[in-house]
Length: 478
Image (cartoon, rainbow, N blue to C red; front, side, top):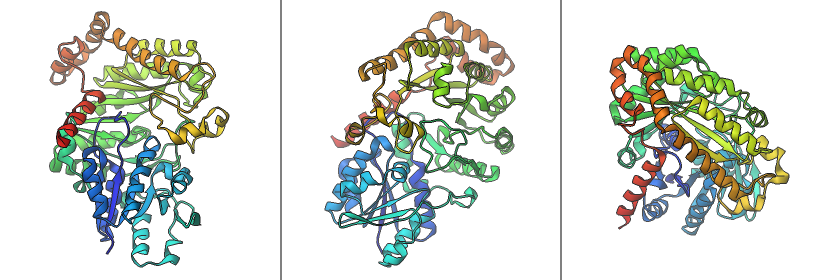
């Protein structure tokens, strides 16, 4: 029986905290459920030699990569084809731009859409060498002798997420991730999809609907993670965890009822929280929230179709701080038509809101998004196909700023804010704002009080985790 390897390729820059990957662990679990041989590998935590050996030991090599990393996936597919392997590409970029993979000449198949149900069918059809069955696999496109031989539409979105098996974390080296990440971070998801219409988000993979898992299964998985792996922090990777607030109240109640004690992080929007919810989340262990603000300029918020106002952003940040939760925010510079005045408005809102960490990216119109459709005349497509996109570079040719200027604006926004945030007056203000909360909740108070006045450092940043990872990998190669 053919052996399948699912590989996640490393980004050229590790911008996020290092942790296990959920996507391929769900696929791995579905392969195990179908009793098909499966192995997983994450290039970020292995050497090149280990990656090559894994490819050589398996027959079908499936790749997963986000848009910024597809060049790396193509390079590894080339190596796999040189070794006579069958290659397939999946994930969000493959779902909107299969041509770049087939044009490379290094892929036999592309599997579009959510693949938990279709990947085992694809492998079973391969095993039987059944071309008729292959041509019926939803989402599968095949390439042979320089041309597409079939191209099937993506499958319907998976409606009942509770039917999916728990991700096969045991197929990845969890303790290796923990060694490379000081926070011992792991991921979980409770929903798929997002109903909002931000112009920069690729939605082909998970859709604009909102599908949820049951509270019981979510907390069962949390309990399993805690008992099996003992992580330091759990990150809910949902696009908008708190879209349905009643659901999160129920989840927090169940966490508290079972007596599960752990620190967790939520991703959400500023208009999807209120103070009672934030207090409840804190009681259940939430210590950080990541907000996608994108801008503090109403004009730019409208351009990006965020359906937010600066007033809502500021109020959410203040409520988050009152609830004793640390806030990180994501911003974008270089959105279409942005001016220095818009950037100044964003910096003003930052100071009014006072989040604990700011991460700024340049505007990137990705294939399959509204921004790609609307601004193609300003996109250097050859640059996009030949180079990586990332938080600090883009193929979008801005009308008011050069790429060098945008990168400087991006860096300066962070530098200026951090200089202001860590100033004595702001430390004193945060101390006063949080004092009442700490008095009412003394068991949470000591560490946060010391952090507010600078005696305890803030949580480890992405850069620290990245440095530790790089140092460890360098030692492994030595």
